[in-house]
Length: 425
Image 1 (cartoon, rainbow, N blue to C red):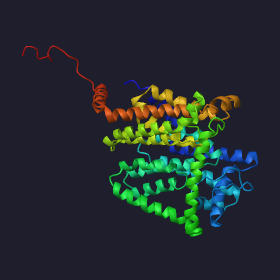
Image 2: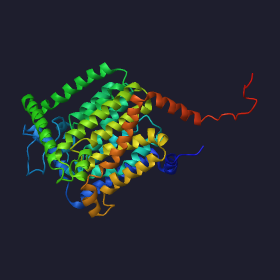
Image 3: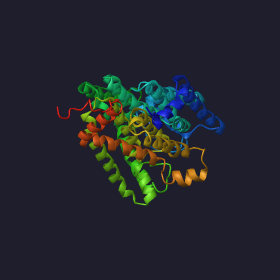
Image 4: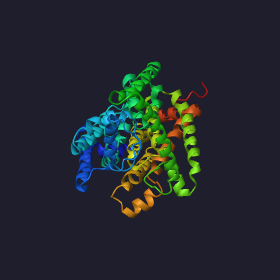
C-alpha cells in the first residue's frame, strides 16, 4: 500500500522520535532561553511581575495597580497564583528563574506523555512545538503550564480521574482564566456529576486558600479587582490592536490589521467563533466516546482558546501549536495526507519560525507582527477541524458512507469472473 506523505514524514523522523531525545531537546530549549537571559545581563520583566504577586499578597497590597519601582506593566494573574509562584519567589532570582523554566517544561512534557496516542506520535508533538516552547521560556511565561492544564484535564476526564481533571481546570482558571476552556472536556467522563462536585470543591479551596497568608476581606476584594482589570485589559487590547502589535495576535487582530476594519468587529468574530464551536459540539456529543473525535475536540479547544482571545501574544501560541500537532498525529495524517502536511509546514514557517530571529527583523516586525500573521495558519487548521466536526453533527450519513468507503479500500476484493455471477440461475 502506498504510504501517504504525512506517514512518510513520520518515517523520516522516526530515528529521533524517542522520549529520551525529545526530553533532551526540550531541556536544551530551556537552557537556550536561560543563556539568553544571562547574555542580556537582566531577567525578563515578566518574572518580577509573577514573583511580586506573592510579596504583595502576604503584605495585603493591591495586586492590580502599577509598581514602576518593581517592574513594568501590571499583574493580570489571580490571587491563587501568588501561592503557586511562592516557592520560586523565595529563591534567589537566578535560581528561581532556572527552576521556573525547567518545571514548566517538565510539567508539559509529562502531561503530553499521557496522551492516548502511540509513542512516536507523542514525541512528534514534543518535536513540533519545540520552537514555541523556546519562545515561551525566553519570555518566562506561564503558557506551557496552561497548555498542560488543558491537555491534562482532557486526559484525566477521559480516564475518569475526575479529581485530577477538575484540579487542573481550577488551577488554570484561577491563574490565567484560559484554563476554564477545559470544562469542554467534561463530556468525556462517565462520571459527570462527580466531576461537577469536584469542580465546586476545588474552586472553593482555590478561592479560600490565599486567605491563609492574607485575609478573607482582602482576597474577596482582590478577586473583584482582578475581574475589573481583565475587563479593562480586554478593552485596551481591542482599541490598541492597530498600534500595539504585540497583543491581540488572534483571529480578531488578524482580520482588523489586514482589512483595516474598526475594533467593533471583535464581538462579532468572538460570537461567530462561539456559535461555530457550539454547532461542532453537537457532533462531538454524538460520538463523544470515540477517541478520534475526542482528540479532534481537544485540538479545536486549544486553538480556540488562543485564536479568540484579545490577550493572545506570541508566547501564547505554545497552546495552539500543541493543538495543531495533536490534530496531525491523531486525525489529519490519515484523513488529509497531503493537505495536513501543507498546513503543518505553514504553521511551522509562519506561526513558529517567522516569529524568531531566523527571519529578518523587517519581515518579522513589518509583515508578520504587523498583520498578526502568526494566527493565520492556526486559524486555517481550526477551520478544517470545526468543518469536520460540523459534518459529523449534521451529515452523519455522509460520514458513515465515507468511513465504509475508506474501510473498503483496505480489503482486497476477488476479481469478478463468469463463475462468480448468478446470471440466469
